[in-house]
Length: 202
Image (cartoon, rainbow, N blue to C red):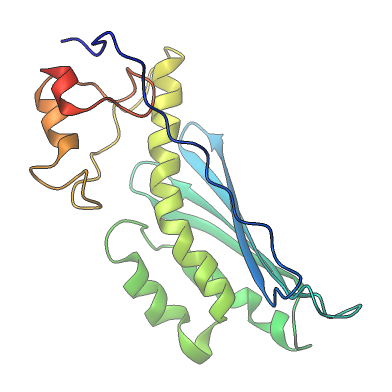
């Protein structure tokens, strides 16, 4: 197998948001950090902010909310969850934060979004914390894969490679390029991103 055909690797430029014009009315940001808690658990901490740049003092930041979950690596089940509200539009908003402890016991595998909606959808939850929670499902899966990749890169023993994300995008269709690269000998984590085209492995 060869991944070097004597040509320069093509990398895409890092995309950036265009500068907000003076007439901007809203900006939403979601940031997540993931880190190992121990050999058997990872923690994902997310933060959602809604900013209205035109608002006067006390009105610019509408929402500033956090959600932190710890997940068991063996089965991707949430074992702890805590929500926090720093900025919010109504004095009663923080009263819903304890409800997000209901995330405990959920697996972030298939069916996570449906179960989340059943437990914390509509008037049973908060639309914005709910959006943050939904985004955490894929983030947890990505965290597990990154953790395994990091351990393998550092030569540490671990549970082996992460499951393939079959069916999650066009690259990982059953007959897509990701599968064909593996069939041709590619081992995830062994070449820099972006992984070269299928032809480079044949």
